[in-house]
Image 1 (cartoon, rainbow, N blue to C red):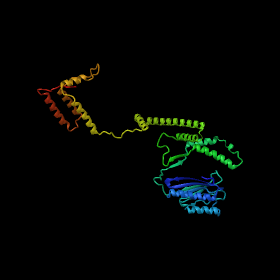
Image 2 (cartoon, rainbow, N blue to C red):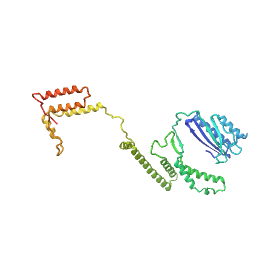
Image 3 (tube, rainbow, N blue to C red):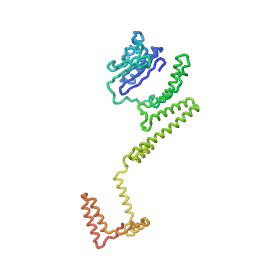
Image 4 (tube, one colour):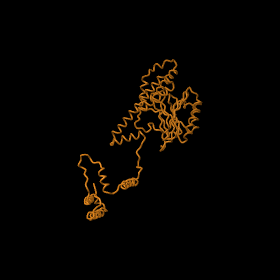
Length: 390
Protein backbone atom coordinates (compact mmCIF):
# COMPACT_ATOMS: atom_id res chain seq x y z
CA UNK A 1 0.00 0.00 0.00
CA UNK A 2 1.23 3.47 -0.88
CA UNK A 3 -0.23 6.96 -0.53
CA UNK A 4 -0.53 7.10 -4.32
CA UNK A 5 -1.99 3.62 -4.87
CA UNK A 6 -3.25 0.62 -2.91
CA UNK A 7 -3.28 -3.09 -3.79
CA UNK A 8 -5.12 -5.92 -2.04
CA UNK A 9 -4.80 -9.48 -3.28
CA UNK A 10 -6.45 -12.78 -2.39
CA UNK A 11 -5.92 -16.22 -3.91
CA UNK A 12 -8.65 -18.76 -4.60
CA UNK A 13 -6.57 -21.91 -4.78
CA UNK A 14 -9.36 -24.31 -5.74
CA UNK A 15 -10.05 -22.22 -8.86
CA UNK A 16 -6.37 -21.33 -9.38
CA UNK A 17 -7.24 -17.64 -9.43
CA UNK A 18 -5.74 -14.40 -8.08
CA UNK A 19 -8.13 -11.52 -7.38
CA UNK A 20 -6.51 -8.09 -7.01
CA UNK A 21 -8.27 -4.90 -5.89
CA UNK A 22 -6.71 -1.58 -6.89
CA UNK A 23 -7.16 2.04 -5.97
CA UNK A 24 -5.04 4.74 -7.58
CA UNK A 25 -5.13 8.26 -6.24
CA UNK A 26 -5.61 10.86 -8.98
CA UNK A 27 -2.88 12.93 -7.31
CA UNK A 28 -0.33 10.12 -7.35
CA UNK A 29 2.52 9.57 -9.77
CA UNK A 30 1.14 7.64 -12.73
CA UNK A 31 4.49 6.16 -13.81
CA UNK A 32 5.14 4.77 -10.33
CA UNK A 33 1.69 3.19 -10.37
CA UNK A 34 2.40 1.43 -13.67
CA UNK A 35 5.73 0.12 -12.39
CA UNK A 36 4.14 -1.14 -9.16
CA UNK A 37 1.28 -2.81 -11.06
CA UNK A 38 3.68 -4.53 -13.45
CA UNK A 39 5.84 -5.78 -10.58
CA UNK A 40 2.79 -7.11 -8.72
CA UNK A 41 1.53 -9.11 -11.71
CA UNK A 42 5.04 -10.44 -12.39
CA UNK A 43 5.40 -11.58 -8.76
CA UNK A 44 2.03 -13.33 -8.80
CA UNK A 45 2.71 -15.20 -12.02
CA UNK A 46 6.15 -16.20 -10.77
CA UNK A 47 4.74 -17.72 -7.55
CA UNK A 48 2.01 -19.69 -9.34
CA UNK A 49 2.38 -19.63 -13.14
CA UNK A 50 -0.79 -21.70 -13.62
CA UNK A 51 -3.01 -19.15 -11.85
CA UNK A 52 -5.20 -16.69 -13.72
CA UNK A 53 -5.35 -13.04 -12.59
CA UNK A 54 -8.35 -10.73 -12.24
CA UNK A 55 -7.73 -7.05 -11.40
CA UNK A 56 -10.51 -4.65 -10.56
CA UNK A 57 -10.93 -1.28 -8.93
CA UNK A 58 -10.71 2.47 -9.33
CA UNK A 59 -7.78 3.21 -11.63
CA UNK A 60 -8.67 6.89 -12.11
CA UNK A 61 -7.72 6.56 -15.77
CA UNK A 62 -10.39 7.63 -18.25
CA UNK A 63 -10.20 4.96 -20.91
CA UNK A 64 -12.72 6.79 -23.09
CA UNK A 65 -10.13 9.52 -23.73
CA UNK A 66 -7.42 8.85 -26.25
CA UNK A 67 -4.69 10.42 -24.12
CA UNK A 68 -1.24 9.12 -23.25
CA UNK A 69 -2.26 7.79 -19.82
CA UNK A 70 -5.02 5.63 -21.27
CA UNK A 71 -2.71 4.34 -24.01
CA UNK A 72 0.13 3.52 -21.57
CA UNK A 73 -2.26 1.75 -19.22
CA UNK A 74 -3.83 -0.35 -21.99
CA UNK A 75 -0.44 -1.19 -23.51
CA UNK A 76 0.89 -2.33 -20.11
CA UNK A 77 -2.06 -4.64 -19.61
CA UNK A 78 -1.72 -6.11 -23.09
CA UNK A 79 2.00 -6.72 -22.52
CA UNK A 80 0.93 -8.80 -19.49
CA UNK A 81 -1.66 -10.66 -21.61
CA UNK A 82 -4.52 -8.89 -19.82
CA UNK A 83 -7.56 -7.19 -21.37
CA UNK A 84 -10.23 -4.83 -20.05
CA UNK A 85 -13.83 -5.89 -19.55
CA UNK A 86 -15.63 -2.53 -19.15
CA UNK A 87 -15.90 0.37 -21.59
CA UNK A 88 -18.87 2.21 -20.06
CA UNK A 89 -18.73 5.38 -17.94
CA UNK A 90 -18.64 4.82 -14.18
CA UNK A 91 -18.48 8.47 -13.04
CA UNK A 92 -20.41 10.97 -15.11
CA UNK A 93 -19.03 10.45 -18.64
CA UNK A 94 -15.63 9.05 -17.59
CA UNK A 95 -14.70 5.37 -17.45
CA UNK A 96 -12.54 5.36 -14.31
CA UNK A 97 -13.39 1.92 -12.86
CA UNK A 98 -12.63 -1.30 -14.66
CA UNK A 99 -11.79 -5.00 -14.53
CA UNK A 100 -8.85 -6.58 -16.33
CA UNK A 101 -7.94 -10.26 -16.50
CA UNK A 102 -5.85 -12.88 -18.22
CA UNK A 103 -9.08 -14.81 -18.80
CA UNK A 104 -11.02 -14.38 -22.03
CA UNK A 105 -13.37 -11.41 -21.90
CA UNK A 106 -17.07 -12.16 -22.55
CA UNK A 107 -16.43 -15.93 -22.41
CA UNK A 108 -15.17 -16.11 -18.82
CA UNK A 109 -15.72 -12.57 -17.48
CA UNK A 110 -18.80 -10.39 -17.71
CA UNK A 111 -19.24 -6.94 -16.15
CA UNK A 112 -22.35 -4.88 -15.50
CA UNK A 113 -22.92 -1.49 -13.83
CA UNK A 114 -24.72 -1.10 -10.51
CA UNK A 115 -25.79 2.05 -8.70
CA UNK A 116 -25.45 1.36 -4.97
CA UNK A 117 -26.01 5.02 -3.96
CA UNK A 118 -22.94 4.85 -1.72
CA UNK A 119 -20.51 6.80 -3.87
CA UNK A 120 -20.30 9.15 -6.82
CA UNK A 121 -18.97 6.17 -8.80
CA UNK A 122 -21.07 3.39 -10.23
CA UNK A 123 -20.15 -0.10 -8.99
CA UNK A 124 -19.04 -2.93 -11.24
CA UNK A 125 -20.57 -6.37 -10.82
CA UNK A 126 -18.13 -8.91 -12.21
CA UNK A 127 -18.92 -12.56 -12.91
CA UNK A 128 -15.99 -14.92 -13.38
CA UNK A 129 -16.42 -18.42 -14.77
CA UNK A 130 -13.66 -20.98 -14.33
CA UNK A 131 -13.36 -24.22 -16.24
CA UNK A 132 -13.29 -26.40 -13.14
CA UNK A 133 -12.13 -26.65 -9.55
CA UNK A 134 -9.09 -28.66 -8.66
CA UNK A 135 -9.54 -31.50 -6.16
CA UNK A 136 -6.81 -30.31 -3.80
CA UNK A 137 -5.62 -26.73 -3.24
CA UNK A 138 -1.98 -25.78 -3.62
CA UNK A 139 -0.28 -26.01 -0.22
CA UNK A 140 2.70 -23.94 0.80
CA UNK A 141 4.34 -24.71 4.12
CA UNK A 142 4.87 -21.13 5.13
CA UNK A 143 3.46 -18.65 7.61
CA UNK A 144 0.96 -16.08 6.42
CA UNK A 145 -0.82 -13.14 8.01
CA UNK A 146 -4.59 -13.33 8.19
CA UNK A 147 -7.27 -11.08 9.66
CA UNK A 148 -10.26 -13.18 10.84
CA UNK A 149 -13.56 -11.30 10.64
CA UNK A 150 -15.80 -12.88 13.29
CA UNK A 151 -19.39 -12.10 14.16
CA UNK A 152 -18.54 -11.07 17.72
CA UNK A 153 -15.82 -8.78 16.38
CA UNK A 154 -18.28 -7.15 14.00
CA UNK A 155 -20.75 -6.44 16.79
CA UNK A 156 -18.02 -4.95 18.98
CA UNK A 157 -16.73 -2.90 16.04
CA UNK A 158 -20.16 -1.37 15.38
CA UNK A 159 -20.64 -0.60 19.08
CA UNK A 160 -17.30 1.21 19.29
CA UNK A 161 -18.10 3.22 16.16
CA UNK A 162 -21.42 4.29 17.68
CA UNK A 163 -19.72 5.50 20.86
CA UNK A 164 -17.29 7.84 19.09
CA UNK A 165 -18.08 11.52 18.83
CA UNK A 166 -17.05 12.12 15.26
CA UNK A 167 -17.58 15.89 15.58
CA UNK A 168 -14.38 16.12 17.63
CA UNK A 169 -12.41 14.86 14.64
CA UNK A 170 -13.58 17.72 12.40
CA UNK A 171 -11.64 20.48 14.14
CA UNK A 172 -9.11 21.19 11.39
CA UNK A 173 -9.95 23.62 8.62
CA UNK A 174 -8.07 21.36 6.19
CA UNK A 175 -10.13 18.47 4.83
CA UNK A 176 -7.02 16.30 4.44
CA UNK A 177 -6.15 16.59 8.13
CA UNK A 178 -9.73 15.79 9.12
CA UNK A 179 -9.68 12.71 6.93
CA UNK A 180 -6.34 11.63 8.41
CA UNK A 181 -7.77 11.94 11.93
CA UNK A 182 -10.86 10.00 10.96
CA UNK A 183 -8.88 7.28 9.21
CA UNK A 184 -6.45 6.95 12.12
CA UNK A 185 -9.29 6.50 14.61
CA UNK A 186 -11.07 4.10 12.30
CA UNK A 187 -7.97 1.93 11.81
CA UNK A 188 -7.29 1.86 15.54
CA UNK A 189 -10.75 0.45 16.25
CA UNK A 190 -10.60 -1.90 13.28
CA UNK A 191 -7.21 -3.35 14.26
CA UNK A 192 -8.40 -3.80 17.83
CA UNK A 193 -11.51 -5.72 16.82
CA UNK A 194 -9.90 -7.67 13.96
CA UNK A 195 -6.18 -8.05 14.78
CA UNK A 196 -3.76 -9.63 12.38
CA UNK A 197 -2.70 -13.20 13.19
CA UNK A 198 0.34 -15.07 11.94
CA UNK A 199 -0.50 -18.71 11.26
CA UNK A 200 0.86 -21.60 9.26
CA UNK A 201 -0.89 -21.77 5.92
CA UNK A 202 -3.46 -24.54 5.89
CA UNK A 203 -3.67 -24.66 9.69
CA UNK A 204 -7.13 -24.97 11.19
CA UNK A 205 -8.41 -22.00 13.12
CA UNK A 206 -9.51 -24.00 16.13
CA UNK A 207 -6.78 -26.66 15.96
CA UNK A 208 -9.39 -29.41 16.08
CA UNK A 209 -10.62 -28.50 19.59
CA UNK A 210 -14.40 -28.72 19.65
CA UNK A 211 -14.99 -26.59 22.75
CA UNK A 212 -13.23 -23.51 21.33
CA UNK A 213 -15.85 -20.96 20.27
CA UNK A 214 -15.70 -17.66 18.40
CA UNK A 215 -16.19 -15.84 21.71
CA UNK A 216 -13.06 -17.46 23.16
CA UNK A 217 -11.08 -16.59 20.04
CA UNK A 218 -12.19 -12.97 20.31
CA UNK A 219 -11.19 -12.85 23.99
CA UNK A 220 -7.80 -14.29 23.09
CA UNK A 221 -7.31 -11.72 20.32
CA UNK A 222 -8.11 -8.90 22.75
CA UNK A 223 -5.66 -10.34 25.27
CA UNK A 224 -2.92 -10.52 22.62
CA UNK A 225 -3.56 -6.94 21.54
CA UNK A 226 -3.31 -5.82 25.18
CA UNK A 227 -0.09 -7.79 25.56
CA UNK A 228 1.46 -6.16 22.50
CA UNK A 229 0.47 -2.73 23.84
CA UNK A 230 2.05 -3.53 27.22
CA UNK A 231 5.26 -4.66 25.52
CA UNK A 232 5.37 -1.41 23.58
CA UNK A 233 4.81 1.13 26.39
CA UNK A 234 5.52 -0.86 29.61
CA UNK A 235 2.98 1.22 31.52
CA UNK A 236 1.36 -0.08 34.75
CA UNK A 237 -2.08 0.67 33.34
CA UNK A 238 -1.38 -1.44 30.25
CA UNK A 239 -0.15 -4.26 32.45
CA UNK A 240 -3.31 -4.16 34.58
CA UNK A 241 -5.48 -4.31 31.45
CA UNK A 242 -3.48 -7.22 30.07
CA UNK A 243 -3.56 -9.12 33.38
CA UNK A 244 -7.31 -8.65 33.71
CA UNK A 245 -7.96 -9.85 30.16
CA UNK A 246 -5.65 -12.83 30.65
CA UNK A 247 -7.42 -13.87 33.87
CA UNK A 248 -10.84 -13.52 32.23
CA UNK A 249 -9.69 -15.56 29.23
CA UNK A 250 -8.32 -18.37 31.39
CA UNK A 251 -11.55 -18.55 33.39
CA UNK A 252 -13.61 -18.60 30.18
CA UNK A 253 -11.43 -21.42 28.78
CA UNK A 254 -11.90 -23.54 31.90
CA UNK A 255 -15.65 -22.91 31.93
CA UNK A 256 -16.02 -23.70 28.20
CA UNK A 257 -14.06 -26.93 28.58
CA UNK A 258 -16.07 -27.93 31.66
CA UNK A 259 -19.42 -27.26 29.97
CA UNK A 260 -18.40 -29.13 26.82
CA UNK A 261 -17.17 -32.18 28.76
CA UNK A 262 -20.29 -32.20 30.95
CA UNK A 263 -22.56 -32.10 27.92
CA UNK A 264 -20.51 -34.85 26.27
CA UNK A 265 -20.85 -37.11 29.31
CA UNK A 266 -24.60 -36.43 29.62
CA UNK A 267 -25.23 -37.30 25.97
CA UNK A 268 -23.20 -40.51 26.10
CA UNK A 269 -25.06 -43.81 26.80
CA UNK A 270 -22.02 -45.02 28.79
CA UNK A 271 -21.17 -42.06 31.01
CA UNK A 272 -18.32 -43.81 32.82
CA UNK A 273 -16.62 -44.68 29.54
CA UNK A 274 -17.04 -41.12 28.24
CA UNK A 275 -15.54 -39.68 31.43
CA UNK A 276 -12.52 -41.97 31.21
CA UNK A 277 -12.06 -41.04 27.56
CA UNK A 278 -11.89 -37.36 28.54
CA UNK A 279 -9.40 -38.14 31.32
CA UNK A 280 -7.15 -40.13 28.99
CA UNK A 281 -7.29 -37.37 26.38
CA UNK A 282 -6.30 -34.78 29.01
CA UNK A 283 -3.42 -36.84 30.40
CA UNK A 284 -2.20 -37.96 27.01
CA UNK A 285 -2.56 -41.68 27.78
CA UNK A 286 -4.43 -44.11 25.58
CA UNK A 287 -5.86 -47.61 25.90
CA UNK A 288 -3.81 -50.24 24.00
CA UNK A 289 -5.74 -51.61 21.06
CA UNK A 290 -4.48 -55.19 21.67
CA UNK A 291 -3.40 -57.12 24.76
CA UNK A 292 0.40 -57.58 24.65
CA UNK A 293 0.12 -61.17 26.06
CA UNK A 294 -0.93 -63.94 23.70
CA UNK A 295 -3.40 -66.68 24.65
CA UNK A 296 -0.68 -69.36 24.57
CA UNK A 297 1.56 -67.37 26.91
CA UNK A 298 -1.29 -66.86 29.33
CA UNK A 299 -2.16 -70.59 29.26
CA UNK A 300 1.47 -71.65 29.78
CA UNK A 301 1.90 -69.27 32.71
CA UNK A 302 -1.27 -70.56 34.34
CA UNK A 303 -0.43 -74.25 33.95
CA UNK A 304 3.17 -73.73 35.07
CA UNK A 305 1.99 -72.07 38.27
CA UNK A 306 -0.40 -74.97 38.93
CA UNK A 307 2.40 -77.49 38.40
CA UNK A 308 4.71 -75.61 40.74
CA UNK A 309 2.08 -75.48 43.47
CA UNK A 310 1.21 -79.15 43.00
CA UNK A 311 4.86 -80.16 43.02
CA UNK A 312 5.39 -78.47 46.36
CA UNK A 313 2.61 -80.45 48.08
CA UNK A 314 3.16 -84.09 49.08
CA UNK A 315 0.18 -86.40 48.56
CA UNK A 316 -0.54 -87.71 52.08
CA UNK A 317 -3.36 -87.72 54.60
CA UNK A 318 -1.47 -85.46 56.96
CA UNK A 319 -0.98 -82.82 54.28
CA UNK A 320 -4.71 -82.83 53.47
CA UNK A 321 -5.61 -82.52 57.15
CA UNK A 322 -3.15 -79.64 57.59
CA UNK A 323 -4.61 -77.83 54.61
CA UNK A 324 -8.12 -78.22 55.98
CA UNK A 325 -7.04 -77.03 59.40
CA UNK A 326 -5.30 -73.98 57.98
CA UNK A 327 -8.30 -72.95 55.87
CA UNK A 328 -10.30 -69.92 57.01
CA UNK A 329 -13.89 -70.79 57.83
CA UNK A 330 -16.71 -68.22 58.04
CA UNK A 331 -17.43 -67.43 61.70
CA UNK A 332 -20.71 -68.78 63.13
CA UNK A 333 -21.78 -70.18 59.80
CA UNK A 334 -23.04 -73.68 59.00
CA UNK A 335 -23.11 -73.07 55.25
CA UNK A 336 -19.65 -74.53 54.72
CA UNK A 337 -18.93 -78.05 55.96
CA UNK A 338 -16.22 -80.57 55.22
CA UNK A 339 -16.82 -84.27 54.60
CA UNK A 340 -15.14 -87.15 52.74
CA UNK A 341 -16.03 -87.57 49.09
CA UNK A 342 -16.69 -91.03 47.72
CA UNK A 343 -16.31 -92.32 44.22
CA UNK A 344 -20.12 -92.42 43.85
CA UNK A 345 -20.25 -88.67 44.54
CA UNK A 346 -17.73 -87.93 41.85
CA UNK A 347 -19.50 -90.25 39.42
CA UNK A 348 -22.83 -88.54 40.10
CA UNK A 349 -21.34 -85.08 39.42
CA UNK A 350 -19.72 -86.27 36.19
CA UNK A 351 -22.98 -87.87 35.07
CA UNK A 352 -24.90 -84.61 35.71
CA UNK A 353 -22.54 -82.73 33.39
CA UNK A 354 -23.75 -84.73 30.42
CA UNK A 355 -26.90 -82.62 30.19
CA UNK A 356 -24.99 -79.38 29.44
CA UNK A 357 -22.71 -81.04 26.88
CA UNK A 358 -25.05 -83.31 25.00
CA UNK A 359 -24.14 -81.68 21.69
CA UNK A 360 -20.45 -82.55 22.08
CA UNK A 361 -19.61 -85.69 20.00
CA UNK A 362 -16.77 -86.69 22.35
CA UNK A 363 -18.82 -86.50 25.53
CA UNK A 364 -20.54 -89.99 25.43
CA UNK A 365 -17.16 -91.72 25.10
CA UNK A 366 -15.64 -89.67 27.91
CA UNK A 367 -18.68 -90.31 30.14
CA UNK A 368 -18.50 -94.06 29.54
CA UNK A 369 -14.79 -94.12 30.32
CA UNK A 370 -15.33 -92.14 33.56
CA UNK A 371 -18.16 -94.45 34.60
CA UNK A 372 -15.99 -97.56 34.16
CA UNK A 373 -13.02 -95.93 35.91
CA UNK A 374 -14.89 -94.86 39.02
CA UNK A 375 -16.86 -98.13 39.19
CA UNK A 376 -13.65 -100.12 39.19
CA UNK A 377 -12.21 -97.91 41.92
CA UNK A 378 -15.37 -98.15 44.02
CA UNK A 379 -15.50 -101.99 43.84
CA UNK A 380 -11.78 -102.62 44.35
CA UNK A 381 -10.89 -104.68 47.39
CA UNK A 382 -8.23 -102.34 48.70
CA UNK A 383 -10.18 -99.13 48.10
CA UNK A 384 -8.66 -95.71 47.63
CA UNK A 385 -5.55 -94.97 49.58
CA UNK A 386 -6.71 -91.52 50.79
CA UNK A 387 -10.25 -90.21 50.99
CA UNK A 388 -11.21 -87.19 48.93
CA UNK A 389 -12.30 -84.07 50.81
CA UNK A 390 -14.46 -81.20 49.71
